[in-house]
Length: 480
Image 1 (tube, rainbow, N blue to C red):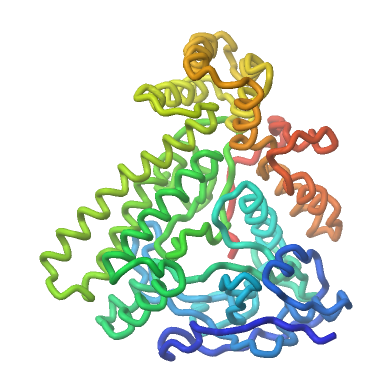
Image 2: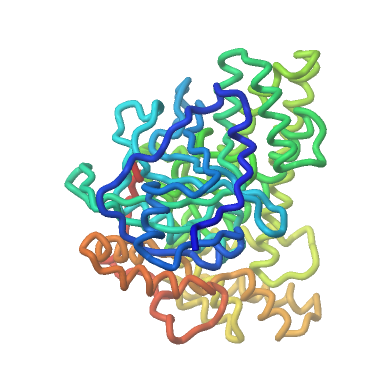
């Protein structure tokens, strides 16, 4: 049976200056590493039964009927520095599919070869970042975080030169769209009001049909980003490279390069090797979101009839992010602490716990998961000084008692908010190292362990352990 993708490529119907039509580069010997069949079913795809044919499909060597491959153009601020033209330098958008429920999704091949936006790059990807993005994006989806998804990973049979010669690979990525803040910045910088209007109309129709005009779009994106960043923070996730070209209008997490989850909690934690000054540290992520959203607001200003009035209204909207984020973040923290009602002291209670965790190098995930069990006192084991938690435990248990909530209900609710397993850095690196050597068993085992991250499962309990001193990963690297 030939492959069938229910394509309806609305982005390809936008003006030609939005992209360059570009076919993926052919590869020598594609081989399938992983295929996300549940996601393929969700998208309504019909795939070949033959693994080799499937590998050719997701390597871009053969194209499904209806594909209109293209590379999107955009600009962006990278670590605060302006780049007037970026774009898909190693990714090809095959097209958009409309799922059986009517939802629309992009299918993109990352590592599919050079494009006009590649600049000095070769447009290829090596296996390490492909496996990293596959693991982390699927884990994020399993934990309920809006994210791009991994549909398939293939090796290309070709070497890729980075610091050393590495095996080449391609990731088939799925997103509600790949439109970024930087997409708007690109056209605003060129004073192309016609393109800005077309892009605004497209994003509203695709993601926020209830929004009206540029102001409604900005308001909707601010809300989506406030929810997203609060979810990141609740999992101890650090994106690592929150450039404006890595912030989507859809509110999805995108571009898992130097990302990482914290082991021991500290608000200043940085993993990214390219974030030398901590611009994108864990605790800075909400403020960076505000900065990025201000750039989106600036890009949308040319669409308003009165610039001065628009600046005033947009400034108020962007400044309102803090309150919206705080509301989302406090809701996340209440859920993590098993609180079903709101009290004005709840935020102080949560922040007191975080401060004690930071002073005692308590593991973020394990501390909250221990509190979620029937013996929450076991969270003391995560602290250098276990007694440091005792005063907080007394306050927390008094707060729980005031709700008179059923204990079993509290445990169930907390365990649904606090994962037992995350893609810890040392496990991801273990999977990559083995995969580069041709052994994908650690990758497959890790994916199985992360498939149901909130469930207690003794068979994968080893993935809940923090790294030893020898296993600890202190730096993560960009996938290019």
